[in-house]
Image (tube, one colour):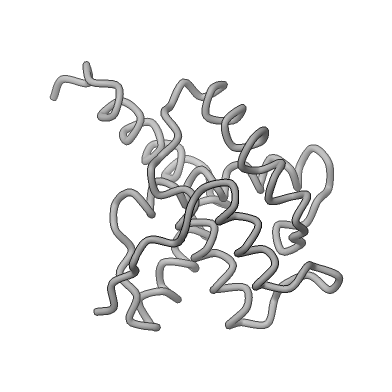
Length: 143
């Protein structure tokens, strides 16, 4: 297999990261399993985006001590314009097209399981902020 195209390299590197990091692998499986139990399809772009989201959040937890379940409008903006792109740049991977949808999927999971950190902004406010910076939610397929 030739890994010459940047998109192929990015997908391969992201999948390798998911397999190597037990925390990311566990959370990735947890969110995807939840999505499937809700009848939500998780396409490849969203799955790759979820790896980036979870990796950025794991780094924030390890370095700064910020809980992955704590979300504010400021954190959304930081994620979109700073943390996500910086992490992807350091890993030499392209920002997956499904990253915003993956973040929405994570929020859906947190909301449904009642695990948003107390003090987080309301889900609708987070969604509005994300849409302002990344565009509206793509249509999600139900299985």
